[in-house]
Image (cartoon, rainbow, N blue to C red; front, side, top):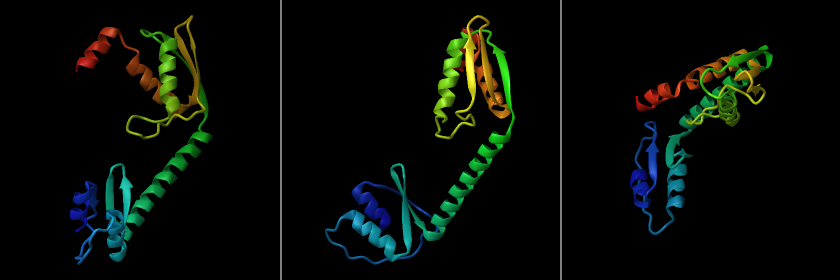
Amino acid sequence: VLQALAKHVGISLMISPNVTGTVTVNIDKQPWGQVFKGLLRTNGLSYTWEDDIIRVVTVDDLNKDIDIENAKISIKSLDWRRREVEPRKSAVVGIKYMDACELHELIAAFFESNTFEDGEASDIDAGWLSACDPDTNSIVMSANVSELNQIFAMIEKLDKLKQDMLSIERA
C-alpha cells in the first residue's frame, strides 16, 4: 500500500525490512500526506526524509538511527578533546614546483571550509595557523601533529611538476 501511494504521487520510498504486516484501507480523495502519516501512525511506524527519499521505519529502527548518530557525536567529541590536548608543532615546508603562496591559499581554502566533497568534516580545525614566504617559496605552519600530517600529505599530492599533473589527470 505504501509503495503504491508513493508511486501515485511520484515520491521515492525506501521501506525498512523490519516493516511487515497487512493493512486494509478505504480512502477516497484525501491528501497523500495525510493518508501516508495516518497509515504509519496506525501501524506504529515512523518516517525520515533523506534528501529526496522517504525512509519508512519501525520505532526500533528509528532508535537505532538515533544511537548511531549519538555514537558519531561522541566520537567527534573525543576527537576534538584529543586535539585540544595534543601538542602544537611548527613546520616550514619548502615547495619545489608550485608557487608557495598559491598553494598556501589553496590549502587554506580547502581546510577552512572544514568539509570534503562527500560532506564529511576534515580533521583540520580552524585553529591551525599558516603563512607563505615568497622569498624562500615555503609555507610556514603551526598546528597539531595529526593536522600537520594531513597538510603534509596534501602538499605532497599537489606540489608536482605540471607534466606529472597532466599524467595524473589522464589516468
